[in-house]
Amino acid sequence: MNVTRREILGAAVAGMALTRCGSSKTKSAQTRRVPALGYKSAVSIVKAPAYTTDVYDTVYRMVADHRLNVRGKRIVLKPNLVEFDPHTSINTHPMVVHAAYEAFRRLGAADVKIAEGPGHRRATLDLADAAGYFSTVPKFEDLFTDLNLDSVAKRLVPQPVSQLKELYLPCTVLDCDLLVSLPKMKTHHWAGATLAMKNLFGLIPGGVYGWPKNVLHWAGIPQSIVDIHHLFPRQFAIVDGIIGMEGNGPIQGTPKNSGVLVAGSDVVAVDATCCRIMGIDAKKIDYLKIARGEDNLAESAFRQIGETVAAVRTPFELIDPWRQMVRAA
Amino acid sequence: MTDWRSRQNRDGGWAYNKGCSWTEPTAFVLLAQTVTQVDRRSFEAGLKFLRSTQRRDGGWSPQPDVAESTWVTALAVLLPEETVGADRMKRALAWLEGQTGRESSWSYKFQMWRNGDKEKYPDGWPWFPGAAAWVIPTSLGILAFKRALRRGEDREWRKRVDLGAEFLFGRVCADGGWNHGSNRALGRDGDSYPETTGIALTALAGAPRSEIIRRAITRGRRHLAECRTAEGIAWLRMGLAAHGEPVDVTPAAAPRTTLDAALTAIASANRNPLLI
Image (cartoon, rainbow over all chains, first blue to last red; front, side):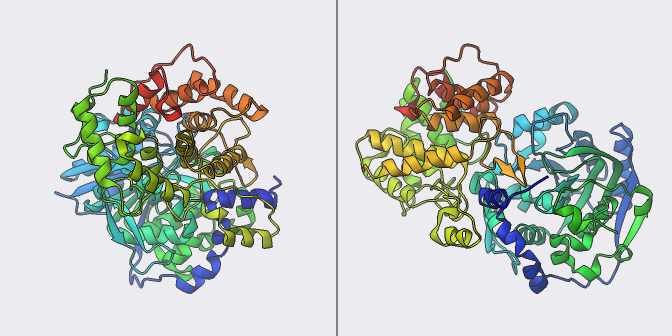
């Protein structure tokens, strides 16, 4: 594929602001957050070969293994809904979302909501319907909040690494006790990979910032991912890698059968582990480096529950320039 | 007829679906009422909400809890002048006139020029101040200033309308329609969407039947045959009608939100209030 300079610049102006992405290496080196965890975060890796009813039990066991105290708590499940095309693997599969809903209810959560604010398409309910959410999740519309159109409150971004100083955020998410990111395992043409952290872009209300949420692009994509992640300290993630997306993700890629679910409370650890499964060097993904520091992203930094990375590793096809930049050895 | 009053909030505005009042659905419900049947009490309450939420800088925020004027200002300008008031309208237009995509700032153009980029970056409108211009806010900005020009106001606005159209022509997707505004990324073509194709065609009403317009109409018709959202269908009907293209068969899609219902009512009316 030949990418001309004009196209890249055109794309930048179309909201992706590559000039700022390009400067992220310097910025990340200067401003990275490196929390001293003092322990090894646990990440669950479980084989799940297909979207069958087994997924319900698998997801329940994964959540239960992490011994989250969710009894009486308010949970928000945040899937990744992007496009209408039902023949691709763009969106988080509704069965994974419903399985998570059932798991948290079974573990005693007082309230479990499903919420999403798609970045390009405005008809969120139609999008959810086309993605199979209405037919899979009973009373879906009663459980669902369109985060693009929710009530909002302004929050300062603490110690920002992006150019964001403050953000309007949806009250549904601000009011919850645990935010559960349910992304699709996908490559991403601007960020390298889109997983649990990048999925949180969908929290930013389109009703305020528009479709797409272009203020985040100008503020620096990897830096904004980190800043939004830090706004929500109580998170859990379950990554839908049963069928992921490789190539020109997050929209125009092709389905990738990777047959895996990955979960954990340390979302950075979950994303770094997913990168390894995808054959991507986590140390070369800017937002992971900024969030945790290059030295803290090694496989040995995390405690794996279930399968090893090697047992489920399924290298994802990458497009240029990512193919050269992030492919793991 | 849609029962707008039953969906109306106590403050006079309308929510997209449920919850607090937002400027966009409120403006579209009022526009729908102007070409269908006005429920006088409901209409006045809606106007009162809009009048009370205009910001000191002349713009409107998306909803009262947001302290920033944004693209929705264009929607208030599309209402009949006598409803919002001439002075309010004038201040709103002045605010809108000052908004462009960040990429058309001199500093950004200079940066691009230094990088060897000779693109023009015509002035469109952003969703949010300080961000790039995109197809929907630019289309609504064009419609707002066309409306003001029809009222005989500042002729200089014609230039903004022309630049906005130039922006849209530059963002046409390879398939002939429009998406949100990113028609090509990393060497790959983006697909167009029904709703953005419809809204861009509406904004380009009156444009000569160029090859771009012909292809967009063809793409719009294909979208209409496949589209399953009330929002997309409504905008496509408006966009095709704006170019004199009859829409014989309308696929069914039930409105899910108040905004859907308002857009459907507008698209079904004999005259489009956005083009009056």
